[in-house]
Image (cartoon, rainbow, N blue to C red):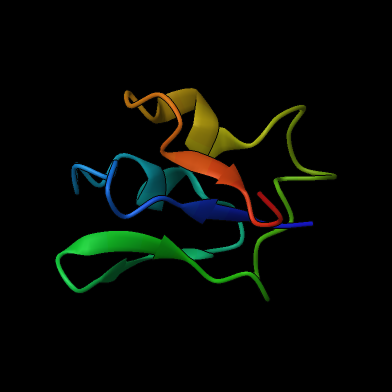
Length: 66
């Protein structure tokens, strides 16, 4: 499974990019995006996705299937 960033909620703070262990988070058109091919939801690295831990906006980072 992978996560995605809701463009309408993203504030482009950039806090999520440096904490991603798979480098799945990247700048895209003034905001941020998550490459679903690289996103592992931090499985095997952390107990929960690190981008969710640092994101200050509710409902900004959600499962891709939502």
